[in-house]
Image 1: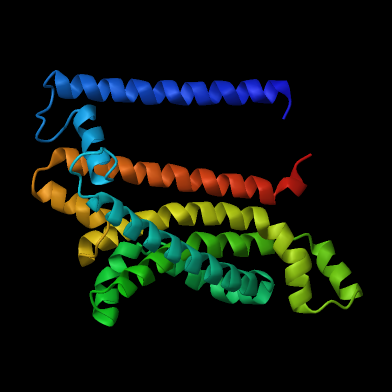
Image 2: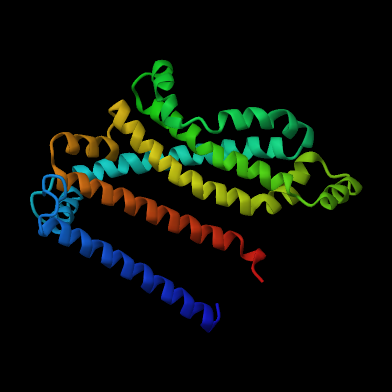
Length: 263
């Protein structure tokens, strides 16, 4: 990275931090000036105190329940995302490598893809019951589609001359997928995996709320019902931090894996 790019990246980080500070300042003014009742909008100080207390980082009498809820939600998100990535890449490669299969399957994919994963929760409950496996299934199903469609698009966009070279070299279909198709489709696959990670977090929280499974979704719902605004906002802030950190980690991994594309 040259000096100009480093300066531009530094300005971006500074601008992002300034926007965050302005948002927190507006939140502080709205809560402390009484624009909204603190029953519904706690102060940033109260939210931060509830966050530290829930994570058992305050050094006081915190019970650490929020930490256990966080571990449960992150576990579901990661497990569902890994399953979604595995099946999405496998199915996407099988579909994308063959124009005929794409033509047959694409209408069905476009029919199923818009279905919201949360709408399938009643069906999943009737099949699996109210258990962690049900939530994991819905998370994996909802997060699979961005990976699947991105993989299909990536394999469909492979340069046709590469297929001709593979035929001339008498490469098997599996060898073509592994050595030519997958490297060319990797940018699309990683982009789909980043989107799938966000969907996995959202569906995990919704599943915990509806199916009464231990996690941040359940903690936020219980805090809302008990009018514990600071606990509710602490859970929301924690969800935002989880999404930010997970996306940043995956973006770093994507940058490392696609170094060969950089000039």
